[in-house]
Image (cartoon, rainbow, N blue to C red; front, side):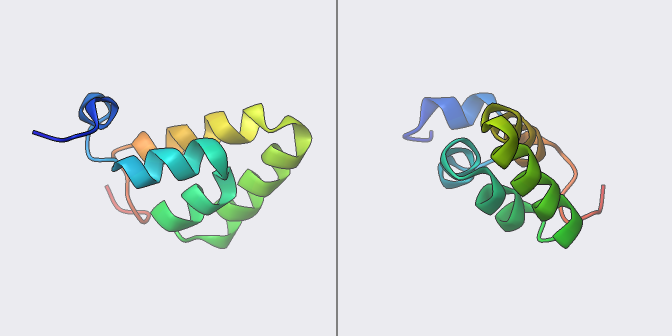
Length: 70
């Protein structure tokens, strides 16, 4: 059983991944995927209004696809 209950709800994403996705979206995306295109897209969305960047990063972190593989 995990200490963080929210992490149990979203699958294999860790608490650190979720925290980075919500507080510093580009860093969370880069840590999870590591591709430049998704990182820069996250930066642009975060600079736009922050909320779109956070939503995008949360989606990337909680997705089943990791590092471009399914």
